[in-house]
Image (cartoon, rainbow, N blue to C red; front, side, top):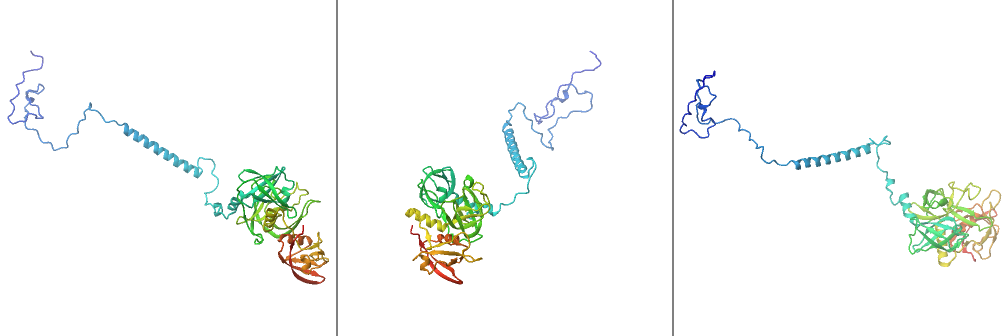
Length: 421
């Protein structure tokens, strides 16, 4: 049949060449390929497989073979990303906080190293305050408030006599930690304005006592107490003067004399009875009186003139109250004029109006009419100075006295005595 194409049966394949490999890459029936032009001059020569000199072919992966899971890889990547993001956010927040970025307007300069005073060493003012405050108490008597301080671990407290005046069974004290305890009066000495009370506690922290005879003008001091009911208040100042003689007391009441420590530390009503402390945390005085320009007690306030009873005098009286129930009063055995200069016009000194026979002054050779101008080197302005300075010392103390008799200045050593009362 003729259809435009001339077809003929392809010849049978030639017999296999002896020695030819059975797995030759060439077709073994190439001569019988139906698409081969039978009239093409070329011929397919079957020979042994040529040796390839190129790179080996890439392996073919079976698409049906089981694949390894990539979930662990994804999980590791996720955890790493989260950690990196958290670390970056933290660092960014710290940077923004320290530099002020993102927190509003940046105020102030770069932070500076803290000064040594901010370290609050034990001998700093803050260190002293921390040491002393547990021993300071607020004394509450029938609605009034004063201060005091613990002088022994078994609960004895020193305060001013005018703080506990009129005290009854409702008296209590509170400590710096806010705890309270009842208290009773052990004894009072109105003329020295000192009193001892006992706190109903088995163990309390006592203050460290200093030496009021060793302080000097200009020494730094701290005043503790509850001014105007503001408990646990601490103020600072210096010793402004020593042996500042003060006469105090209500009209018609007990007259009190002080040879006081003057300070400019702020002291107000409610500080009375609290401790005046030196820079080492040792009590050197008992805050007692202030000088004010106010017309009444209600108007009185600090103007930088406060006065404290020297601790040496206070502890002597407190010890006598605890041991004997009352304190002795030191006397020189003479009566003096008070209220102004006692000598001639323009002169100073304490004029002796009378001298007790066989008393300390008479034994030392002083007579009525003599004008005492100095005691232990302290210049006397008037009789108030003499009374206050004499009471500063303990009975049996020997003091050097300078006096004027007429126009002649003389000296004597006087052994002070305790009042017969």
